[in-house]
Image 1 (cartoon, rainbow, N blue to C red):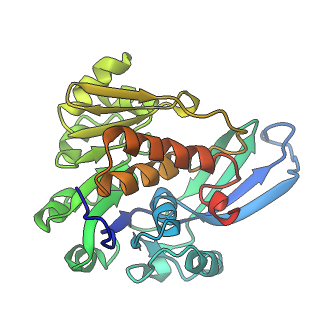
Image 2: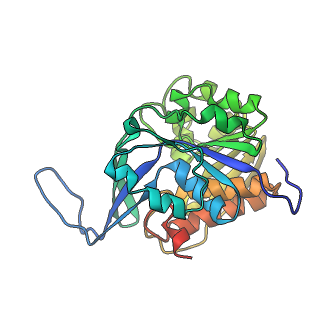
Amino acid sequence: MNEQSGQVGPSILCLGRLYCDVLFTGLADLPSLGREIFADDVTITPGGGAFITAAYPAAMGRPTGLLARLGLDPLSLALEAPLAESGVDLGLLERSAEAGPQLTVAIVRDGDRAFLSRRASGARPSTFAQALGAPSSRHLHIAEAATLFEMPDAVSAAKERGLTVSLDPSWDDTVIHHADFLALCRGADVFLPNVEEAKAITSLADIDRALDALTAVFPVVALKLGADGAILAEGSSRIRLPAPQVEVVDTTGAGDAFNAGFLDAWLRGGSPEASLTAAIACGSRSVQAVGGSTALRAG
């Protein structure tokens, strides 16, 4: 999708679950049953792929809306202030008692992390149809396949309204190996997996063959390779770019930041190489701070 120079960018709607992320850092070891260990620090921040992906374009000045549900419990309500400070449009955020608490505890050690999460109620916000019908809406980003499995009409509903659609599978053991995974995702314009997700979804260990299988379904595939950069595949065309060497503090949300950079550039009509460059830049920025969107507040 192209945008004419000087025009306000299209509104990106980011659909997915919203979490309270509690990230423990400064650990000498990982916890085990029957033992208590102590972290040097803890960061509490809004999380979930939908919010993190929305936060980066919002910081770039692009109108971006969060299409999610937020509980009314104390933990959920504590997110209200940082959500408002992010600049993301919260007008489509559904607030409901049954939507929380929704929590992810992350243990970060040596640049890697482990997660323990709790989901609450369903993923579909009551504002979904309203959001797709808004005159400013141009693109729907679905932040995890688990939400799409709960809302199998999401892609077709967006396409009927003339929106382009992107999807990050976001590894979930309950759906990643599902036989109907690709059939359910069909219609999405941009697919944004990491390399392990791509291999699992296609049941192909070879990256090139996995990309061939994915580009048979999706017009654009942006494959994340972590510290090795990324590959952009469109049909038989392949562009591979490296990632810069940066100090990795925490990789939580780096893939969602990558998505944001890619979509912002792609929706502006950026070239494949420019879009991939923007994606890698946002992902690299993210890993230099604790939490998926914390780097934005660092300036």
